[in-house]
Structures are given as structure tokens and as C-alpha cells.
Amino acid sequence: MPHQCAHWCGNPPVKQKLLCICSLIRRCGGTFPQGKAGERKVDIMKLMVVGGGGREHAIIRCLKKNPEVTEIFALPGNGGIAADAACVPIGATDIDGIVKFAVENKIDYAVVAPDDPLVLGCVDALEKVGVPCFGPRANAAIIEGSKVFSKNLMKKYHIPTAGYAVFDDMEAALRYLDTAPIPTVIKADGLALGKGVIIAQTRDEAKAAVRDMMENHVFGKSGDHVVIEEFLTGPEVSVLAFTDGKVVRPMVSSMDHKRAGDGDTGLNTGGMGTVAPNPYYTPAIAERCMEEIFLPTVAAMNSEERTFQGCLYFGLMLTPDGPKVIEYNCRFGDPETQVVLPLLESDLLTVMQATTNGTLADTEVRFSDKYACCVITASAGYPVSYKKGYEITMTPEAAAHTYVAGAKLENGKLLTSGGRVTGTTAVAGSLADAIREAYRLASGVQFENAYRRSDIGQRALQAGNH
Ligand code: AMP
Ligand code: GLY
Image (cartoon, rainbow, N blue to C red; front, side):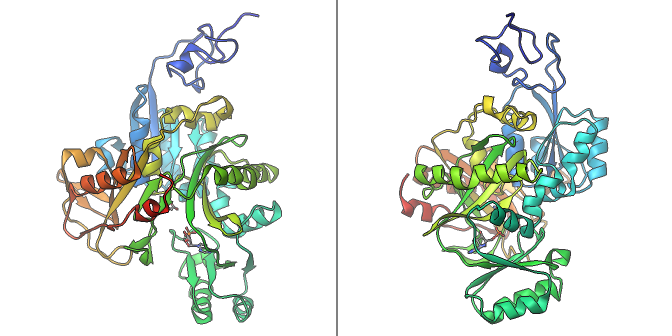
């Protein structure tokens, strides 16, 4: 049988069937979308990344390592991302604007990073006009978009998670709380900018949270339905996984630091720092998670005709009864991405295209066995209230290791424009070195009212296994 590349280059394959020289030298990654066999394409990859935070900056830097990538647009990006991509002032939820831009600029591949455009159907809309995309369609993004959906999915398919009850009637929820075990966890059903989860230590606190969500509508429509959940204990682990709906390729595990203050005190934030890998996530636990959680979740979504393709984020708690799902996200985590992607040794674009094309089984996803630490520099007062508009300065060394989350360019100056401003990542041969180096580099990022936690990674260091 004559062997010819199954992809676009037309070369004879190196080995028997699919493995062709073009995928080895990453000309098409084996999955170049528009090429036909035998047709040699000019090497131009125009990419578009939807979003504008530290996570998107990390994704863009990682995509840029591929020499085939000639142009990256960030919609809308931010003042710091502008150093690595062409920022276009189109909001991440302006689906019509995003689609129009992609068509007019002949985008070859799009990455939709944040939750809201995914839930709004950005991938569906781009696919409709023929732009291949990384990210789940809206019918699969619901796994993050509705906690009622995800809890019911886990119950139906026996995926371990906290016990729960769902309410759409406030009086019934309040009555339930008269006898529910305390502490308890109250969750608004829909997206709530990461703020829709209240851990209530007393019955009164729990009832106040229900009233806030269902009567005072502090999270808008997201609070029309609430989930009241059993309080779980144990170390938390974030596992991001690539999936094409058939196979699951977990990335290196990570540990977020959600509270604003040292020693895990203060309010919940979007995340004040991360380390990878997470020392609590042993190979035995990883195997158990694959069997009991990851594969069953992907299979459950298929059974519901909601095939998930993209990055599925498993927020896990390692309870005394085994690993349980705290939350699913339909996207890369922030700031988990800022430690996970610097450890990726395979080409990110190739892996992303494989999730889109359903060829992940044939694609290597390899991570370094090093350690990474990301330290967030925030505006003092975050997550409640803080001043913006301060000039940011970075040493060139710090800038090379820093992902910018909340900054804008004004008259050539980089100014703070958000709560989390930057994330500085170091990679090293030991966790202790990665932490030390991340803090050393982060000290090269300066602006008035800058605030960092001083203990990112300390809990992981104490846990051992590194
Ligand atoms: P989320 O906004 O869904 O990421 O949740 C915020 C944090 O609330 C999680 O990282 C956990 O620390 C905590 N949490 C959520 N659900 C539970 C639960 N059932 N038991 C204990 N802690 C929880
Ligand atoms: N770091 C948590 C999240 O991205 O949801």
C-alpha cells in the first residue's frame, strides 16, 4: 500500500501510517486545518486569543514558542500583553465583534480562554463561520456555567462530590438550613466572577447568604437557584486536563492560594499565587482521579450529548473518603495556567489543535519534571476596593518572567488597572528554589500600593514529596 502523509505536506511518512515528517518538524502538527494532502502550504499561522488576563498572557507566551505562529491577536488583551500580541479593543463577551474580527482577519485558529464567552457560545459562533477553536461549545461549557447542572451530572453518573440539595424557593432553602449540618456551603447556580461560594460557619450566616442570593439578588440571575452543599475537608488540588471528548490528558497538578492574606486568612480572591506540581497529588491519587473522576466526567458529558473539547479544570478536594470534585471549570485556571504552561514541553498549539480535531490519542502531551511557582502582585485592598492608575516598572529580567493581568498602556506607560496586576513565575529543579526565585523576580515588579502574599508555596513545602 502506498504511504502518503495523511496531513497536508504529501511527504512519505517516516514510519508506517500516520507519523509524517510534517508532524515531526511541527509544520502542521499533523492537524493543519485547511491543508490538503500533497499541497504545500505557506507557513503562516494567524492566531487569536480571546481574553485579557494573566492566564491569557501565559497562553500567548506559550503559543509563541511555536515558530510557525506568525501573528497573535488578543481580544482585548491588556497593556502588558501588548508586548507579546497585537491587542484589539473588542471585549471578550462581544461575540459578534469577535466573529467579525476573525473572519475579516482570516484567523487560522482561535483560543477562547475565559468562562463567560465560552458559556455564551463563542466557540459555536466561530465554528459556524469556519474558524477552528480551542474551547468547549456552549452546551458543554454549562459544566461550569451551572452548578445545578454539574451537581446533577455528578449525582447521575456517580462521580464523587459533596452531598447537596438544590433550591429555587427561598423559604424551602431557609427551612432546610434549620437542620442542615454546619458549617455548610452555599453556591449561586450561575457564573458569579468566582464570588458565588459562601462557606457559612453558623446557621445565621448560611441564611443570610441564601437571602443575599435569592432575595437581594447580589449575583443577579445566578442566585435564582442555589446549591446547599456538604462542607468537605482536605487538601485542595487543581488539575487542568486537555480532552478531545475521547481521551483525557491531565496536565501537571497545581495548588492555588485563594485567600488574600498570609496563612490562608482573609477574603477569597481569584488566586494570589500557585505552585506546581501539587505535592498532595501522588501518583496513586492521580490514578484514582483518572478512574473515578476524569474519565467518568468525559463519558458522562458524551452520554448527555454535550461532548467536551478543550481544557477541563477539575477543582478537587482530597477528603478522608477519597478525592471529590469541588468544582468544574470549562477553561484554564487563573493563576494555575501561569505555573502549568511553563512546565509544558510539548508544543501547545499542536496539543490544542488535537483537542479540536479529536486526535489527542496520537498527540504527545509532555511536561517537565521541574517545579514552578507564581507569585501574584496585587493592588492593596484587593479583592474589596483598591486604587488604580499607578505606574508599573519592571526590571527586564522580571518582565521576562511576568504575566500581566491588570494593566493598561497610557502614553507609553504601563498603569495598574485591576486588583491582580501581575503574576511572576519561576521554574526550578526544586520547589524551594522555584519559590525563592519567584519572589526574587517578583521584587523586580514595582508600583505604588503593590501587595503580595509572602507565603506562596510554604504549605506545599511543608507537605513534602518534592
Ligand atoms: P469556587 O469559587 O467554586 O472555586 O470555591 C471557592 C472555594 O470554596 C474552593 O476553592 C474551596 O476552598 C471552597 N469550597 C467550595 N465548595 C466546598 C465544599 N463543599 N466544602 C468545603 N469547601 C468548599
Ligand atoms: N484559580 C481558580 C480558577 O481559575 O477558577
